[in-house]
Every structure is written in structure tokens, then in C-alpha cells.
Length: 395
Ligand SMILES: Cc1ncc(COP(=O)(O)O)c(C=O)c1O
Image (tube, rainbow, N blue to C red; front, side, top):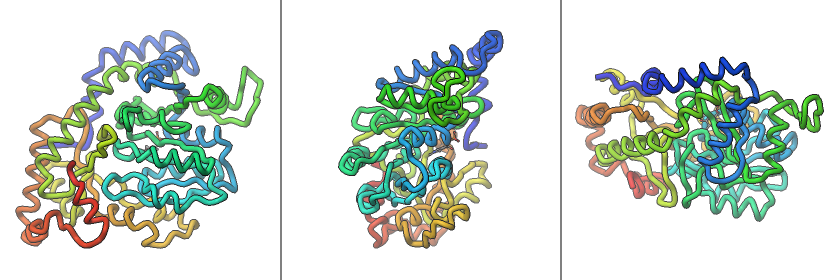
């Protein structure tokens, strides 16, 4: 059996008729940029989020950049952010000229560690970018409380968490801004690049609409310095077709996740679901020893497994000038060596999921050394991360 990591071709085939019609309608309209399809999708996405305003833009990196610009973040400012994220989060901060300052994560939820966040706030801190990684919302209540105390802006990076909830609220509606990526493999993806910024403030929304369009308030009147970052009409039309299905896709992602967890919780560290939220499993990530050998074994059996992400941002060559030393973000560095992402997309069949489970189990059955480790559950060790992770694995 073959189990790919994703299958965008099958996804298109399933919705082909509607998508082809939407693309044709757009081509026939003669509107390609900032037209009725974008306005329609933005309104639909606002309704989906249930609160505030949405401004489409070219991609999820620009979405963060535009939100930071709207907060007047620039050179001389510091932005607090996790290093355990897709590097584009960091690219967006650097695009403003500000410096990222890295915050460690909670090793069980993979999101921002609030205690570490508090310890890193200084006079130069201007904003916080919590990343709702893998589909789970960060611990927003204490983050918002800290932001309020210190007068900081909060930009939720929701690239991986469209539809996720925190205490009943949609990801992207809690902070000052929410930023979304519609990269094709996301929980809702365009057929190319796409992104959006959400905000509860009309004033912020008007600013975003100018910033994404060369800073224009109206044609040829540039009230602020802007960029070119627009969600084009064809992508907006494709996203409108898909938006009504996101709920059922996320439900299926959760079903798959729970099937994996039931099958694997005694063998590896399975994801911890924060009881305050609804995890939408953009990625299903386990932790285990010998993960490189596990990935190789799975590949031999036709199962594609990946690592998100093998090198945290503070250890990337590009950011060496920030002078972070190994050991500076212990939980981040600990999980980085142990994480494996198993195939996760709504079209996966139960048979495929069961085959992945059997394959992971087979790896451990063939390895006596690992078997011994399994006798102490999940290699529960002595570090605080191991204890914390193992006490919450698979809930
Ligand atoms: C957490 C996170 N932030 C930001 C981005 C950037 O999104 P995009 O690729 O649409 O620019 C991505 C996607 O790659 C992401 O996963």
C-alpha cells in the first residue's frame, strides 16, 4: 500500500466541476485583481470567522508582514515569536526591519510557553506573534493579558489553524490581527499562493486594505507607504468554492487523528489536545526516539512521513547573526530531534490510516532496543519535558 503525505490531485478531482466553473466565470468576467470574487470571498471568510473584517493578500508571509506594518512595527523594535515554526513567520518579521526574539514552546502542545514569553518582554518589545502550530491554538488568554499589561500588539499566525477554536473563539479573532495562509496544502488551500488578515477593528481593516495596495486610499492617492500584496480573483473564486467544506474536512482530520492516537498511544508520544480548544490537525505529529530510522522504515513500506521542522529558526544559518547558542531554547531543541509528521489529509482512508499505524508498530516490533525503551512508557525520562509530555500524551 502507498500512503502519500498529501494528495492535492485527488482533492482537485473531487471538486473539479465546481472549481472549473469558478475559474471559467472569473476568466469570463475580465476582472483579475481586486474585483467581485475577492470581495465575495472576504465577506464569506468574515462570516466563517464569525467576527471582524478580512482583507485578502498574496500569501501567509505577507499576511504577517502587513499586520506588523499596520502595527507600525519596524527597525529598532523587537517581536517575540517562537523558533519552532515555519521560517516564513520569521521572514515576515525581518521584512519590517524588526528583530525576532525567540520564545521557547510548551513541549506537549508545541505552542508558545507563556512563562518564557513573560521573561523575554523588554522596553523594545512591540508585538507578540504566537503561532498556532499544527492546527492547535496557543494559550491565548495569558498571552493577551501580558500584551495588555505591557501595551503590546498580538498577531496570531493562523497559517496552520483555519477553523481551530480556543475557548469557543475562532483562531484569528482573539489577537489584534489573525493571519492566514492559503498555500495549497493548508486546511483550506488556493491553487497557488494566497493569504488573508483578519482584525476586529474597522480602522485596522482600512489600513490593511491600503497597505496591500501600494498604500492607496483611492486611485493614485497614497496615504501611507504600502506594498503590492493582493489575493487575485481566480484564487478568491477557488477559495469560495472550498470554504463551505472546511468544517467537514477539519472533522475528518480530527477523526483520522483520533484513529492514529488510539492505535499509537502506547508506542509513541501522540499529540496532546488542549481541553480549552479544538485542534484541527493541519499536521499529525508524534514524538519518538530514533525518528530518522522510523521515517526510513516507513518510506520502505510506502508511507511518506516528514519532519515539521527539522531545524528551529534560531539554529538556521540565515539567523546566525542573532547569536543564539544551542541550548537557548531547550524545549524547542528537544522536540526538534524527536518529531515526525504522519500523513494527514481529509481524503485518507481508514485502511490507509490503519496501515500507517501497523507500520509504526512494526518498526518497534523489529527493534529490540526500542522494545526495551517502550517498557518504560514512551521512554519517560527524567527531564521536565519528558515528564510533562508523557503525562499529557494522547489526551
Ligand atoms: C506557521 C506558518 N506561518 C506562515 C506561513 C507562510 O505562509 P505562505 O507560505 O502562504 O507565505 C506558513 C506556511 O508556509 C506557516 O506554516
